[in-house]
Length: 440
Image 1: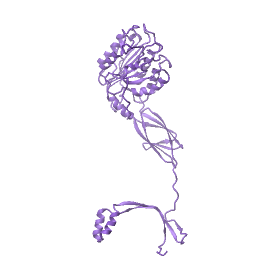
Image 2 (image 1 turned 90 degrees about the vertical axis):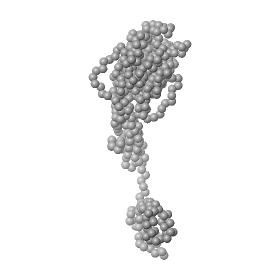
Image 3 (image 1 turned 90 degrees about the horizontal axis):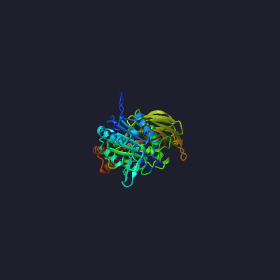
Image 4 (image 1 turned 30 degrees about the horizontal axis):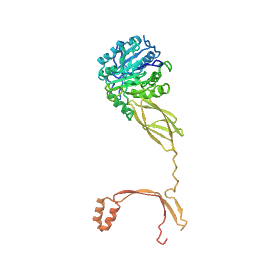
């Protein structure tokens, strides 16, 4: 329900094979293949079931449920991979109409498919039964007769053969679908995460709250949850987006603009195996933009050793293969170069500021062959620059030389002490230019 009425409102995005029902659209034309996280074409169809109810016959009427449902459906079919759809608004969303949609999905959605279910309308929680309910448009008030129990909906979800199901619910008490305590979050690179969760079976729910009432119309004609859900979907430019990422993008906005706290978790007892539904965006950006600024400005920017310009500058990086760690180098004469690897994902716009450290100039020393007078004895000195040379011999060379020269064992042992061959470095020094005697 949505405020002010103490009911449950459930916008559901069921991510898995969503069943096409009464208003399935014909598919025309040839569409470009979308690539999945594994680099292969996305297999299977994406089904969308959207339910929105404002005009209740015997329950208080709502204002935002149908506009919210219509807006979500429009964004999904326009910008994302949707192959089949069922939409039920107001008088179409009867008990029979909703009950028919799920068996249709169970019959037609295949193993590799995904289903997206969105429900916006009243809901109710029966404390005696410890269960939540959806409220169809023809439901009777003050009774659970004619309501759709969450437990029944979960049983329908369990019968779906599809790989992924996502239930998005914008409603009072919608957290009843979820596990009380979900597993700890995985921490791994985003591209690895996408590849892993895409392969595994999922039955997840994204809800506008837990066990509290939620708002109806509040932000620009939408509920807080629907407003920030639409914002997350419309402003995404990445080729695919997991339900967890959608949750991360809307959770703070909803919590800061309402008295409700959204949740994302697996649906209890529905067959989840740790996967996630992915939203595949059509015509998604395959590049990321890094805006590089440096102190001082005017530094050269290289991406994978290719020159891209001088700071400040915006650099476009091709990420057709998905999220990558990209090598970026920023350098300027007289300063220490900055070499970094930035994790970038398609569609990302990243500001990056670099502070370059000034190089300390080495002290100026004598030039090779430079001379000067020794103030102690008046002799002429010459500068010998430092350098490196090879010192010592290996075992075979020592044995051969010992046999050839007939040196004694002590001399051989001395040579062994200087082995194996190694390089020795000597710093520069002043030496007498002419020969000198021991007396001098």
